[in-house]
Image (cartoon, rainbow over all chains, first blue to last red; front, side):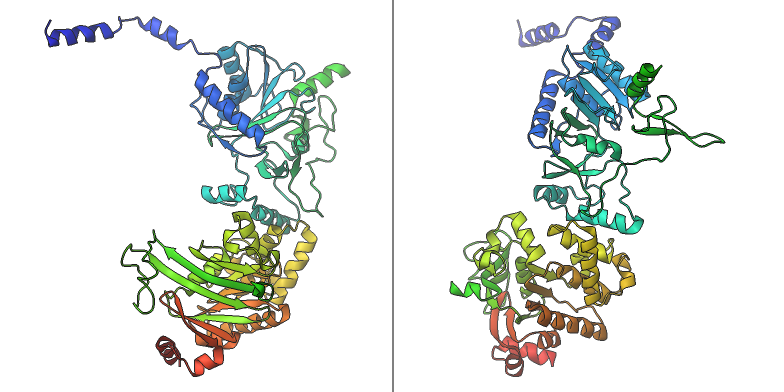
Length: 304
Length: 281
């Protein structure tokens, strides 16, 4: 056999037999458990372990391309897919609402790629993925709370240079954060930051509470469950382990306050002690409903 | 050394080389050779073997032309640059036993906040221009651990009124301030935590004569009032004459002469000092 013949024989044997388009499509439809490959899941779990070890510290991770756009919960989704096991029960909410488009899509994706049970009931869930809210009762059974984070850096509005931000966190040099709060108070007579209120975690790192309203901030203090924060676009994971100190930054003589609307009552369950969403009305005062629909549903059912 | 406890600031053998550096750097530069650039490795010996002591309530001037290394020396003391060689001790930092240059980064920064204040020629370096005058002072107070809004507000109003910033401008953004007013805000900020040592890098260069005179008066009054140890870097002999009793003359990164300010101005010994004084008169 000449060298040429030998080479062409080898080449021919390396080319796989032609397969039909249906075969290829069929193969593309079979994901590994939880969509991500095992190495990616391992990398995410490692980042989570680092994050839990250093509460409030933003751990960089190689955010994978997900079948949702970055900024649409890809960070939270990667955490959920990284930690979910076949026996978990997953609940996904957008604001407090299980029926939000984003929540419904993510829930379906998680279900289809893992086969796990999903639920709308907080009490049944072992993992709750959320955008904007902590469930109204918190996580009293110690479940894992996964939060989708758009901007993980609490100091982003104060300093643009990443190198300087790193230095500020490393040296716990947060004076400029206090300047921002001071200026806010001087200008407006109140600290106006509504969502993403800055907190000091475990007495060390200033952390962005992501998009949760002030209402939910006190819930993170000595929270029973593990809270994991994932920012897919910014490639950061951070965590608040159970029973960790989470203290909102405020001046000694200016107490931290949560938002309250005088006279607002949920039109469904009559609650005045929950976080309420406004429904503007054309010719009459706004109406209000509980933002956490699961909690509201259960109260409504119990009352009727 | 026993002198550590007495002087508010003691500097020994301070040196800064920009570039890779080599064993020949020091020998290959200096006033005798009239160069800062090391011919062997191309590094710049910005300053070398600078040493002095300043007591509380005393002030020391450093003069020299542009590029003589006086600002670099000051920046090393302020913590903006890491020196290549030398030691610096401040009495208020562990009783003058801790070398500033070997402190960990966070502790070093704390010295800059509480013990050694630096006023820059360009207020933009020492201030955040897009923050109010009050906010700039709060930055220092918060860095030193102040967390009480009312007390911080009280302290900053007191400081800014002492440095003659009008009360109605306290909540204005510094960018809208004139040069002289910015410099007054900068001084208020630097003094926020009552540092014992004040470093001034060309504090009035760029200000017109009458405004500069006002700022110099303020600095002199504050020095007496707060018993500050002051180091002034300037190429302007009027500033040195007005603020200091002792002076160092620097050329090509080395101290070429030192003495009492009035004596040195009347009777300079080193040829370079003579030229410098003659040029200023």
